[in-house]
Length: 78
Picture 1 (cartoon, rainbow, N blue to C red):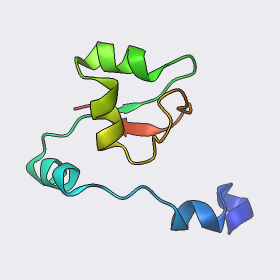
Picture 2 (picture 1 turned 180 degrees about the vertical axis):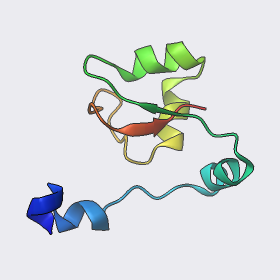
Picture 3 (picture 1 turned 180 degrees about the horizontal axis):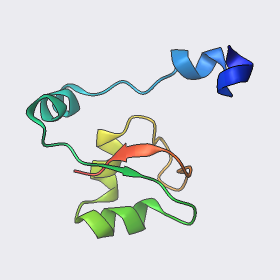
């Protein structure tokens, strides 16, 4: 199954967990998400959506280093 889906078991075990705040927003339908594209930086994304890098990091547990994001990641932007 891992070969067919091009993922490994650890990716499932280490999946991002939503914070209580994010879960409330998702339930209320107010959260906004963005798919990171090649060449994006956290600063560019934050500026585009009128938020701070700190807010993006708080909403997205997967981002532990503000200088490292990966194309294809889905991140919460609002």
